[in-house]
Image 1 (cartoon, helix red, strand yellow):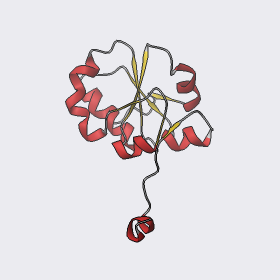
Image 2 (cartoon, one colour):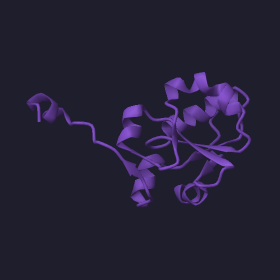
Image 3 (cartoon, one colour):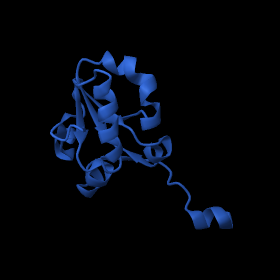
Image 4 (cartoon, one colour):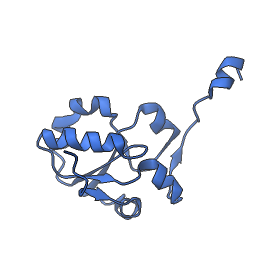
Length: 121
């Protein structure tokens, strides 16, 4: 039941990211968002999306949803459309595709890897 025809490319998102008629919603976890994200993106993790429905219903423009690969953003799109929010687009290929195209990102601290946590590095 996902709206696969309701997609937008990373290049198109990049061209629209400063347009106030569009809001980029990153549905990844706060940790993923802190590591790397699109500069104008707002982080609303998938599991918190239901708490933001009223706020998102008030937005008159287009909501662009994205995650790491677009799996979670497709689920988010389904949740929103099931709640009457149809002004959405899903960014194809997610952050993986965004970074593959070398588009601008904000980088935070990388999460420590397993070995560094064990060794206290």
